[in-house]
Length: 361
Image (cartoon, rainbow, N blue to C red; front, side, top):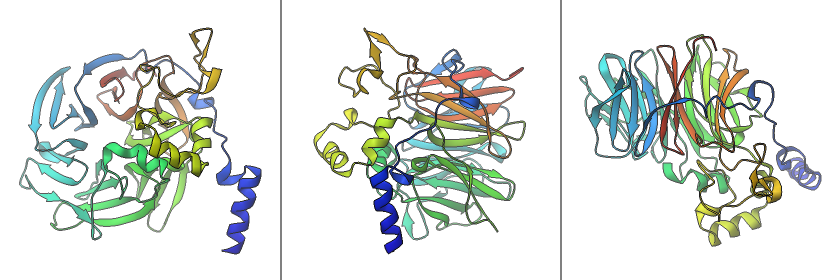
C-alpha cells in the first residue's frame, strides 16, 4: 500500500502512468478518412439504440419498437413496454431485448415473455449490449451500478468502475451469473473461441475474459472510447467507438476539484466531456483556438464528437477504420453489424442508419 501510494504521488508529480494525459494519434489503421461520412443513409429514425442481424435481415431498436429491414424497407417486428437499450437475434426468429437498461426480455418462441432483472444478487441498472452464444446463453454488459444507461457521462466523470459482464442461461429462470465485475464501464462484448472479449470503455481497451485466462488485454491505447463489438465475416471484428479522446477531457478527468465543481455547477450538456454530436450550440466547450481559425473549422481540431468504426483482425489488432471527422455529422457510433456483404452502422448523433458495401474493401 505504501509503495502504491508513493508511485501514485510520483506519477501525479511527473505526469506519468495513470496521471498522463497523452492520447494516441489517428494514424496507421486509424488514419483519418471520410468513409463513414460519405456512407449511404439507409434510414433516419426517432431514437435508434442498437442493431442486430440474423444473417439475412437487419434489426434495429428504435425507442420501444424493433424494426426489421428487408431490401431496405422497414417493417415493425415488435413493440415493447419500455425503451430498448440493447438488442440481439436468437435462432428461430426470436429476439432478446434490454428494456430501460434494467431487464432482459425474450420476444417470440417458447420462452416469449421470459425476463431477467438481476445477476449475482444485484439488479441490472445499465444494460447496453446483449450477445448470444452457441450453447443457449446470453452474454450481457451492465455498464454501471450507479447510473442508468442514458447517464453514461455521469459515470465517466465520477471515474466509475462498477461495470460487469453477466451470463444468462436461457434454459433457467431466476438470476444471471456474474463473470466479471468492477469494470470501468463495460459496453459491448463478443465471443472469440473459448473466451469473451469485453469493451472496457473508460480504460480505452478491449479485454479477454475466460478460462483458464482470467483477464488479458486484447487491444488498448485506442484513439476513441470503445463500445459494442460484433463479428466480421472474415474472422475479425467490428469495434465501435462512440467518441474520440482529447487531451482536454483527459486533463479534466485528472483534476478532481475542477471536475466535481463542473458536475455541480454546469449543465451536463456543456461539460468538458465526450458527446454523441456537436457543433449545433455556441455554448459548447471548445479547446481554445484549436477548433476554428478565422472562422474556419479545422478538420484536425480536437473533436468533441466523432464517428469511428475500427476493424480488428482475429487477434484484436486494428487493421482499418471508417470515420466521420470533426467537420462531419455521422458521429456517436454505438453499433455496427455485418449482413450479406454490407456493414450497417448506427450513428446515434444524427439518428442515422448507414450502409457501407464491403466488396473490394
